[in-house]
Length: 306
Ligand code: PLP
Image (cartoon, rainbow, N blue to C red; front, side, top):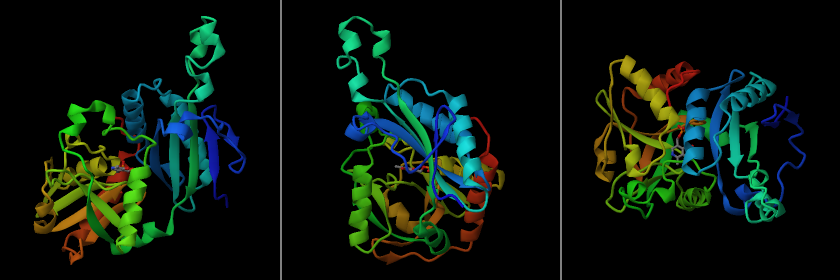
């Protein structure tokens, strides 16, 4: 059974243990690029059209060349097939601005006036790796969460679009630092809060709260990444008669609701079982919410509406 699959955008299945990137790739030098993380289940990439739509949106935000979605779709399909249907996998689509030495102003051809040749070729590939051990535990038992200040206002996304808050960029160092900080505090994950004490998101997840038969999540304009899993849950929950909405949430809302969930493409639904040291018991409908996410992801399969 393979434990790594690498496919480049020309459709070639590469040796995943052989070097691929150049040392001057701007994705590495500056984190200047975008990515998607997608669950492979039963040999298929879940909710792939949503992910392709968000990849396109992120690329636009960074002024990257328009991703060729048909080629991405094919590369993803090849990678998922190579991975097989026996177990789940973590599929990443990675798109960087390309090599620094090919940037206008760096490449010789620019000085010779050949501007067309100066456009760098973006680096683009699909990588599949095994799902980490923490995922099964988070799905089954839930997670301990601490709230941490993100140091931003909910106005920032609109006031400063160059902050790229709604794009899934490769610059995840602070997100990972927050997770390590949480681990040192004995927690599994983080909910970021804004300067106004509003709920934002997790470092790699969307926050959704449930109250009676209502689901709420902060709107993208507050500076959070629109979540594929949350969107899939909403579509399915609405079908099942739930009321689903986008609303600015205060941190106090996390304590007065029935349950708090961190949703993400790989873990899917992780219920917060402790928040800042306060135990949060499971509501009666916890299983229903988990099933709605599962069904939502299945149904989102090839829906193109990002
Ligand atoms: N917010 C952030 C910052 C994330 O990194 C992620 C997941 O990658 C999410 C939210 C959840 O998005 P999705 O459900 O598409 O995985």
